Length: 553
Image (cartoon, rainbow, N blue to C red):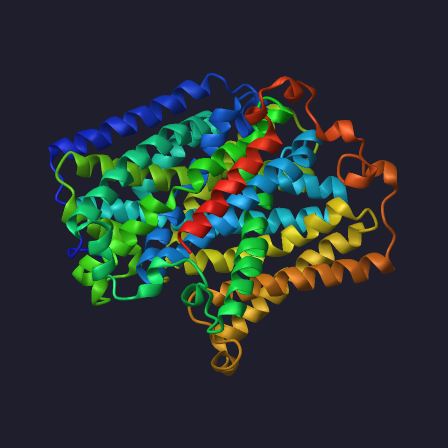
């Protein structure tokens, strides 16, 4: 049994516990209220496609604003400082705009219920099954990250053993997802977004004040490169500035980030729940606006902790614990309660997103398609709820895997390189090249994933790791993702030229060249004001991201 971490205890009082308890009452209340609206599987898994853009947009970003964002990016702040901004300004924001403008018409217009279902209708059962299984595995592993960090907050608060906090945290998340399905998850994510900001903003401001403001922080952080985004040699692992920039733009920005944001059903599911094509397209773009400013309240606390918290400075504590130590040292009671509720909200949002995406893919894309076909809708609704319980239980064990990594971002980027990078390559070619065949769909996915795993294994566990494979920072994950992307494309092209493609009439809605233009537009959008339309809103978002890159270069 793992004992409590006595070195890290949050000095909470009844005021803090009351705030946390009040928050949980709201969470469970939302789950119970959403339960009344669940009468079919489409209600449970996709909220009946009835939610407005501002709700799905905030849920889109909140689903990602979980353990990875807060703990992982603050850990990156400790190690790399402002170079971490590349995950947001080079990676997330452009990818979210691309998803909204280019890819959502394919997803939403085709009326598919999941990303793997899109693969089924574009490529057939081979690619569909490979994608569904790999996605399901990835969600169970990533849910473990969120659960682990949720448990660590409870551990630091109550001093319970880690195994007990894992079980309690799992039960809390399970309760509201099982009750209300995706609607409960989404409405809780909107609430959680505001709670998270209310927790992290005071922590950042108090932290900056404690070190003497911006100038004081610059004096305390010894590494000058921590205050510049480019060329980012620390985080990329490449000493050559030019190669570092190329690696960040291609490996992190294009392959990993576009691969994650455009094909990861956890986020895409929120867009699919929107009430129109226009709302679905704007969902990720609306989420991109707060996304580009989130690093100021997650990366900066990591930098402050790295310069002021003794266990972090002398490396007796993991970078993952930076936020908790900062809360312990800086926040008075009351604010501490809000911060605890904010962290719990973040980790619950992340885990709920993973579990709700898993239960959809498992129920629709694996169970209904390959195991038990042609049953009544109530049956698949029941399967979804059982899958939710099972996934939550498995996450308890995958959390123990995540606990072996000092920085969860290292672990997460490795997983994205395995699963998302090759999937993005297959998607990209499949949407714009009608000649790509069903056989090429599943063989390219397997080849890309296999290449990434092989690269990672060589770099981590063989003597070759001391040569060209030795990349500090998170360069190994970027390189593995790039290898997966390139191998996927090569295999897709070669196999497509050797096998038979689908006829054009079966590709309508899935390949741009054979799909009528009206399929990709919402007639009602032409009547909206300029900045309420998808493309102008996306352009404004990209301009703001470019300005931030220039200001903090």
